[in-house]
Length: 152
Image 1 (cartoon, rainbow, N blue to C red):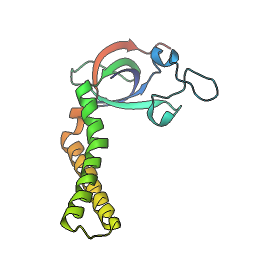
Image 2 (tube, rainbow, N blue to C red):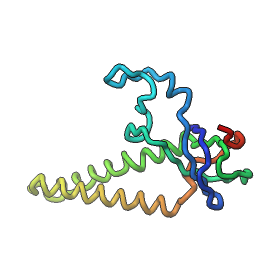
Image 3 (cartoon, rainbow, N blue to C red):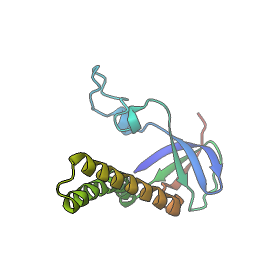
Image 4 (cartoon, helix red, strand yellow):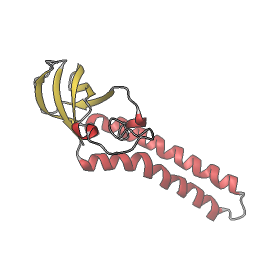
């Protein structure tokens, strides 16, 4: 993932930026129901038309200031890991909780098995939170280039 944006806040290595709409968004052909096929925000979080903010880390020690236009990138492996931790990991824990209850007590009502699955899912989300706390900024997008101050 590569994004371009303008810095709105700097705290040590942590950078907050507003992400620009890319040229790919303007040329997108995804229909939006009312016939509009560009600027539909299909690829943005929750199809929001609000400005997208993003946190990144400046590991390269680039000299940055609020208002600078920068490029941030997230390695594909890190993006896949985040998706796995958020979507697949809890699902696996749900199935494990459901399955263990079904195997341990085959006569148990299905509602008990489902509740066990939900408890497993909650445990998975707690583990994800712990991983996020421990890893902190290690999985954040990284500032890869400075394109200069915003002259708009």
